[in-house]
Amino acid sequence: MIEERKARSATVFLGGGRITSALAAGLRLAGDERAIIVYDRHPEKLQALRRESRVEMARALKSAVERAEMLIVAVRPSSVKEMLREVAACGAQPPKLCISLAAGIPLRNLQGWLGAPVRWVRAMPSPVCRIGRGLTPVCFDRGATKKDRTLVRRMFEQVGPVLELREAQMDAITATHSPRHGYHALRTLAQAAQNAGLDGKTALIAAAHALSDGIEYWRESAEKLEGLLAEAATPGGIAAATMAAMDRAGYKRAVASGIRAGIEQARKNAIRR
Image (cartoon, rainbow, N blue to C red; front, side):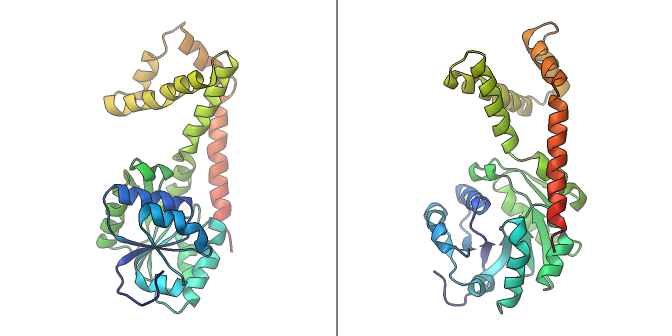
């Protein structure tokens, strides 16, 4: 546990949940030896994180904030306002650079809730950053310096590609880049194959190949997506018939509906007071 005041030299996470765990693990996998401090209202749940990623556990919010060179808010959107109010009241001056991982919470809210003159960044790292294959969209407030942008990009680039976007684009990419899309598609496709007669293991292998290996081929080949779609579905063939039936059943509409719902939830997060 940290007790004494030390120089600002650490990356401090407020919240020790899944995304903190994934990001810390990804940074350690990349060889990043920075000091990582995690503060959570329930420190007992940090034991596994401490063992896995060699993080320090902060007993008190004030001592954590005092160590922070970079402060990362990693709590649920519904808890961000309360957490920032606690930071403002704890008696420690926050660092000049703060990052929010909370979906949908706009920069103006973050600035207003903390009150301190800090430069804010919004980031949405994918949980796949745990294995260095994440994707992290980021947006910066107007006051962010060139040094801020470099520091943030360098950190997240250790765990996968970084996309710098306008804030107006953050909700759409948050609803789109979640790996849950892939997991959901894998489960759905494998279940359909099982219903059609395959055993569970074979169904998962076939579905995983269709999704993962096919997409990996697209990544590595630099082929246009339309060309690969045509290559994989001969007119009059099984794949073409399968895709056409899925589209008639509303596949495209279902995906579009899901993205709209995700964006709508992000907007609900944005209006929290």
